[in-house]
Length: 193
Image (cartoon, rainbow, N blue to C red):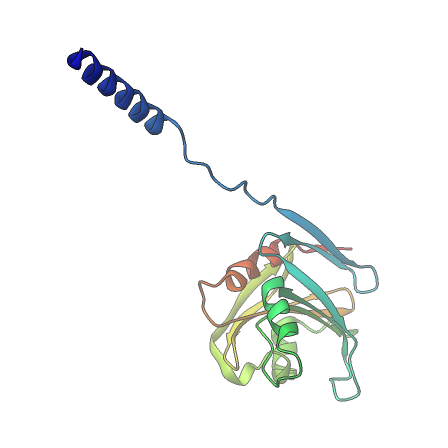
């Protein structure tokens, strides 16, 4: 009888071990990725961006009298987590978090991006360039790309399209950060209208 009890206990332990080994661990359901499209008929472009998980919120800025007279519009994309932290800081003075921006400048003379950058060095912080500008392309339109230093290291891409100069910029603290990695995805999502 004692041997039967021991044998039964061994079989039960064996079955439990097999069950534990073949049953996958429970995992949280993955958050479904969602995207949204930002579109501007006035400025002739659209782009798709991630809203979830680790998504972005959009804010638009109309230039003020202190801005370059050619600046028409700025659209900023901020990580939701950074936006929530900024909102939670209340009235405490602080720097804003890194963002991805699209600044649209009037360019009725159709000045090439490399020449425009020389004529507007402040727009891309060109005096603090890290390396030389290189050729770039956004949705089939040729431009230039340059990395600059400042409060944040920033990837800058300038592209002329229609009567506008588009300055795509993405600031970051760490090159492996989510926002730094997302910058190229934003560029790849641009469509001209």
